Length: 304
Ligand code: NAP
Image 1 (cartoon, rainbow, N blue to C red):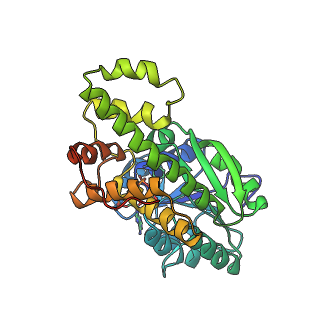
Image 2 (cartoon, helix red, strand yellow):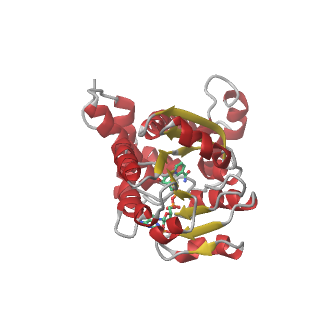
Image 3 (cartoon, protein in one colour):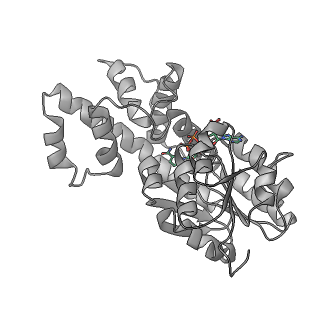
């Protein structure tokens, strides 16, 4: 990376989160080369001057720091380790930052494969939602070595407000799993509270005036209840991606000998929504699953 010039960035995955995040880097004067599966989703960035590359490898060849923000672990594997992936095109000295929510074990695998080519890798998943991405207020949870973190931090600071190195490769993804475990049970609380308030004949905004600023207040309550109230079930954060995250967290928990009943219940409720065709709605659509339970619904055996 040139210390005198602004590093050239590469961006792979310009969806809800990635388009906004890459936009912040461009607004700060970084030249950007982008690739994403559906080219139309990169169009706003291309109109602002980003260059298009035909493969992740070609992105890497044109950049000092490459960011990936795709969907699932299989997508991360394809765009990083695949035949035309980032590592196939990156020069020694390039830095790769995967900001997707993915598996800790895959982050460690990428770290090892990157090192073998003289590339430094960080896992750096985020929290803060579409709003946090647009407003550059994300929390960024980083795994990797301290030197690489220090070099990339100024770029991360253009996208987020809370940027913490959690430990070696995979630690960012583990921290994001903690985040998702917290969100999973929190969303059940938010939607149950809302259903109860409605059924009790209360005025929801007036209820929020009492509870949102107290011990029950949360980001999920403040951001999702207003969306639900105006009938907006669009993502935000897609149910399919949340189920992916909860499955990773459940697998890691099992591997560590943990039983987490709150996470287990949330995953089962959200999986019902995927089965019912709601996988591409926002996670606030949990309300639909709870509404359908009715009186005395069977949620299967209790975990103890
Ligand atoms: P999204 O809107 O689906 O964006 C992902 C983008 O990556 C899409 O444009 C997708 O292409 C592209 N992509 C996926 N696989 C690809 C591949 N193999 N090669 C090239 N491009 C590929 O999802 P998002 O909401 O931005 O989420 C991205 C990641 O951030 C996910 O891991 C998610 O769990 C995580 N996350 C999301 C939020 C949130 O609130 N949205 C918050 C925190 C973390 P297509 O357009 O063709 O689908």
